[in-house]
Length: 118
Image (cartoon, rainbow, N blue to C red):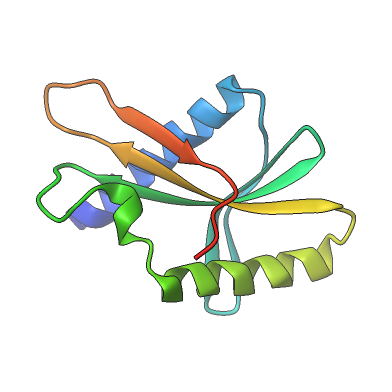
């Protein structure tokens, strides 16, 4: 398996565990709509969270959250539109970015950036 795929899976596992511990209900993971994919769809306090998870092992190419481009964010919104057509009962939807820093010999650093707009 390619290292970046393994890193992504590990980051998404940590993200799901962190979100659950913080009171989020995980509704879907790796949900696909056509060519679009949403890493995590969760809810908490009547808010639907569409979450893009980004993981990095070093800061050589910047922080994980910096890798969410305008195009990636638009793809996230397109995927969410497909999910919302199928499950339309949510009143408030927000887009979040979860950054997972997995440096060697250190505890993972997890940061949730809520209600992001690009």
